[in-house]
Length: 219
Image (cartoon, rainbow, N blue to C red):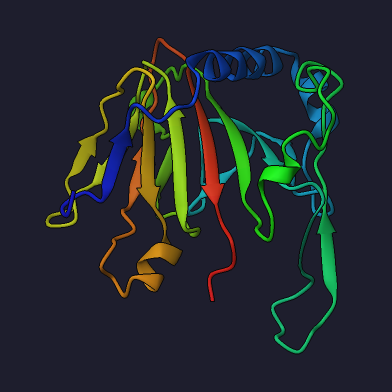
């Protein structure tokens, strides 16, 4: 672990049926037409929702995503000025189908307080030229921890700390991948390392991944 700083958790207590249901709903959403998905496209005012034009280090990612807040609404500082006391309110954009699932919009809010964590549904379509593209380019996560649930296709690679060599993270059925972010590295005075990572694409198979980022406020 000291070379890679990513680990996988099994026997975590999260029901397999819940994960499978989320995967099913995510697939139903991403299988819709582009016109339908863009009805909840994020923008400068609403940063939560659907997006298909992300860039990592100025290179277009081969993926589409749907972001949503754990706590809805969420308050964040309106600017980076420490003297600015104004707050900005972020809210989720929910498609009418299929993510509503009949549950109240605030069903899970009581489990989380005083944080700005968010969840993301990732979809990586098959890529006709995988040697020319990446699902996500090399980067480090800015938050505290990222919890990933990747499917059997895989694709996540971690840069080994010692020499920077890319190491594939082999999918383990029903496991969660825990990735340490920059905040945790700062809080631990570099005892825990925020590993650089990327996602490679597949020429034949689509890949789906659920992501939960524990952000809080890194100060």
